[in-house]
Image 1: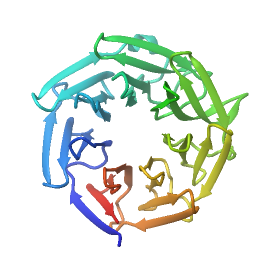
Image 2 (image 1 turned 90 degrees about the horizontal axis):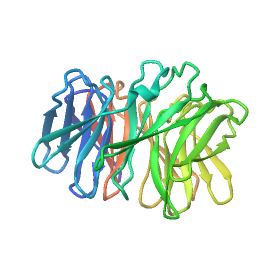
Image 3 (image 1 turned 60 degrees about the vertical axis):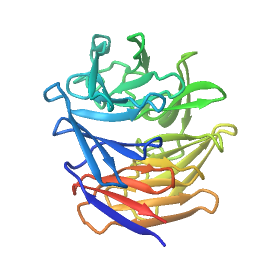
Image 4 (image 1 turned 180 degrees about the horizontal axis):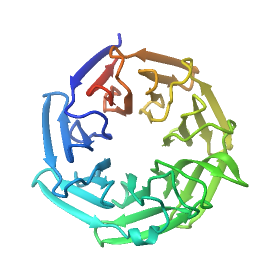
Length: 321
């Protein structure tokens, strides 16, 4: 039987990640300029104030080997790190001078390569002013940053996810306005070779969404925020499969794949959480009890329970069973 648990949250929204080593949830408090840790077993909430005023913490991730917590600071264009054991704080000033012409030049989306500890970051669209969008790699041990120019000066992408495919680190993201290649693409970038590979989505106006690699099937699942679909790209066959979400206008931007290959997604415009079983093609939707929920990133824990922020609440929810 499926059950829903909710907790009041200090601030609406916030990007959330799960630490499988401790069972804690970590999230950003953008407006309050804080990083927070929540233990859903004990209900204990711990907050750290970022010592940089008005930094606007955006995305967050955890180095699973060291337990260090990394986050981008959207408005000051820096990468931050908190040591939860010592409460120590470190920041990296990123080479934003290499991003000249990229609108407000803010940095947000990020993901950690768990095999190396390197942090990948991209600037936030939509205004590229004719300059290719960039991806940065930060080696936090050597303090060295590497910058790649991607796209054609018009194409944009929001989120990036790091995966290891055949022993090689690759990045996946959805991209639009790649004229001459595809209107909407699922894109693979290999930093070690600088190779870019794009697959055109069947829906020309699918919209961007988060993409995640599933190593069990050698596939990439991704949301289509405008196309109202969840899609899967089979890397081996180049075949794309799509599933139409029953509720129209749901905006399935955020997705997460659990250990069994089940795909969870948020329907932020319709206050629902969805689940796709790719084997049976069954989509299940759960309506949330609060009309202002606006569910965000779905997070799957070690028991395959699903947590999600509620941007309109503010609350955090958990679906079990």
